[in-house]
Length: 283
Ligand SMILES: NC(=O)c1ccc[n+]([C@@H]2O[C@H](COP(=O)([O-])OP(=O)(O)OC[C@H]3O[C@@H](n4cnc5c(N)ncnc54)[C@H](O)[C@@H]3O)[C@@H](O)[C@H]2O)c1
Image (tube, rainbow, N blue to C red; front, top):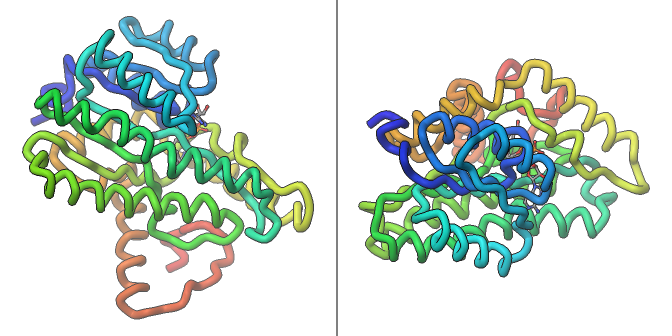
């Protein structure tokens, strides 16, 4: 089935919908005929997007708060309708050597990128099971979920964690007898234009220059990054086609996945690259 036939007419809940990938997914979901619940801590951003997308609902909610996600799920099921698509998308970056990383930045990143996904699952999955209708759950991992990159260790770790969580969750949904209705899928974007590097944490002391040059290197990628609306179209189409790994740039991200499989199969130690990001040209 195509994306419109699969998702049109349903309700989509998207965390981190105020900017970047989440906003692209929200716009495309609305274009497919979905009612979109825009969830973010950035009240202004979701209010503005809400005005652009008639019929959407903007809810300020911090994914670090399990009670807030529980209230969100209750509110959506009572006031908007059963959820066809949950996107656990909110995420933040962090630059710098691990030993320089402020504990508060580490805690915040893990709370948003990893625990936030868990809280979303905890609040929405039982309601999806009870509703008995087809539903999809997308968790945002990354190309960073299959590579090792220095100076972004907490982020890369969190994206490996989300990938593992999503793979295990898919098995649990099958084990519990819901796989005929509930599709769990992992989204692995490559480079998509967003605010994530500007909004990223850095370090207060230690090697500030290393942290900030890594931020600058990542900001350089923005010029060649994919448009979030185009990324959304690709992801919706792959999801509707029943893929498990949803890749914004199938060649680029697929190469990184193949490289990861080979590194593990050959038990190769991580290799320091001249550009500290995944670049298939450097393989
Ligand atoms: N942009 C890329 O190239 C890229 C690549 C791979 C993976 N990703 C992943 O895509 C997701 C979206 O990232 P993006 O690049 O669009 O970033 P972004 O910074 O443009 O957007 C992230 C959104 O999440 C919101 N947010 C932050 N903390 C929150 C919280 N506690 N509760 C609710 N919302 C919160 C922000 O306000 C923002 O609107 C992230 O999980 C990121 O790791 C992005």
